[in-house]
Structures are given as C-alpha cells and as structure tokens.
Amino acid sequence: MRTAAVAVLLAVGCASGGPMAVPGSLKGYQLVVPPESPFQKALASALKHRGFKVRDAIRGGGRPAAALFSYVFREPPTGKVPGPAWLHVRVADTRSGVIVAAVTLPLDSLPADPARCAEIVADSLLARAREAAAAGS
Image (tube, rainbow, N blue to C red; front, side, top):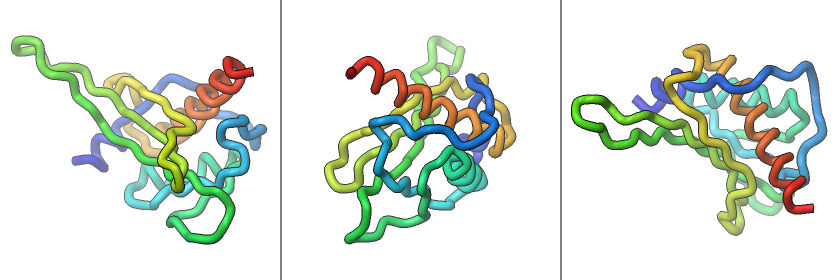
C-alpha cells in the first residue's frame, strides 16, 4: 500500500528544463534514494537531472550523505468523511539525523504517474530549500 500511496501522489510545481543550482542546505550532499518503488526510481532520476549526486545506498567514509524518505499521513476522519492524506518527503543528514530539506503535499491533488510525481517532488524540495536558504541569510 505504501508504494501505491506514494505512486498516487503530487501536483504543485512545474517540471524544470535542466540542471539547476543546488540550494545551500543541500549543497555538498550526496542524496541516498533507495530504488524501492517506481516513484523512488523516478525521483532519483529527477534529482540527478537537477544537479544532485544520487546513490541508492548509504556507504561509509565518503562525502556527506543525506537520505531521502517519504511517508503518507492520513488525518483522522470527521464523522463519516475520511481525513485528508498528506505526502511527507524528508531529506535527513545520515550522520546527525538533522532534516536538511522537507516538503509536504496533499495526496489527493497529485498525479498517479510516478515520473510526474517525482518531477513535482524534486521541484518542490528545491523550492523549499531555496526559501529556507533565503530566510536564513
């Protein structure tokens, strides 16, 4: 169900046309995106296309790495109406556990195509990281 839920995800951004500058909070990290589902495979590809170094497993003794993980949270129902579901995507430093980028998107507004979802998640993560970098400077 997790793979199906993640694959039925996102719509909030626009696909980018090519590599772009990696924002400050993510600069220097190799992203770890395990290829556990079509969505995660597509997300790894979308992040590579945007200039990230991406690998599929954590390795010791290398450059700093940040693991990408996602989950779906469904709010409790209100009466007979099911609560809204949200896709949470987090990128955490593998050494300290600190979240270095995050985005939360409404599940019901996302396309079913894993590749389109991945493009939207990648763009949303970059936009959030840029916002955070701008607010911190």
